[in-house]
Amino acid sequence: MDSKWRVRQSQQVVKDRWIDLRAETCETPQGQKIAPYYVLSYPDWVNIVAITEDQHLVLTRQYRHAAGRTFLELPGGAVEDLDKDLEVAARRELLEETGYTAPHFNLVATRFPNPALQTNRLHTFLALGAVRITSPNLDTGEEGMTVELKSLVGDLEWIVTGLLEQALHVSSLHTALMTAGYLTIVPNSSSR
Image (cartoon, rainbow, N blue to C red; front, side, top):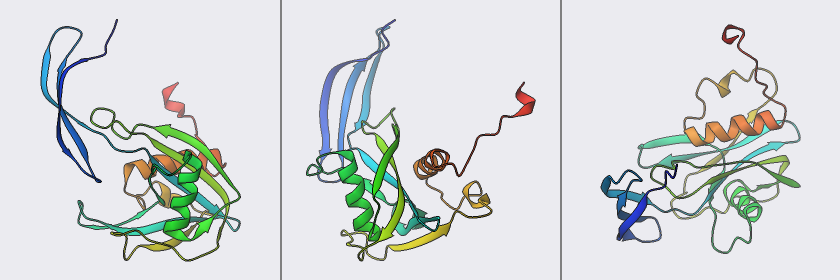
């Protein structure tokens, strides 16, 4: 069964360097009209789970205006037109925001942040052996961003107790730490 909606009309609502919003008139395979249906187009994003040789996670702390407060997050940002590929974008974002780089960046996941409304994807990179080689080079709006290191040795309870509050960052962190062997999935015996 074809489940794809047909777009009967599309109108640009607003488009600038920050947002690309269109209102569409859609028709479902069953003939139902849905209008307006709003779609946000963003460039793809990258998140980087950077781990130093002494097993510290490289994080940023920055103000997020929509929530009106500061969050601890993974380094990352938008893939830019000048980035020749996703790894270049990940390397650039990590270096700009933290001053860190790593010898190898491994793509560990690609996910849709919100496929009901957004067109973009989030690409999560694991960067092992991260080292600081320079000072951060922050973009406008990132003033006040700081770099923090969190130990991955010992109790990792902070991973599940909400140290990171941004859902996409939590998902990226869990995936990368499982890939790197810091976390394992324990089967639930009650589900048998």
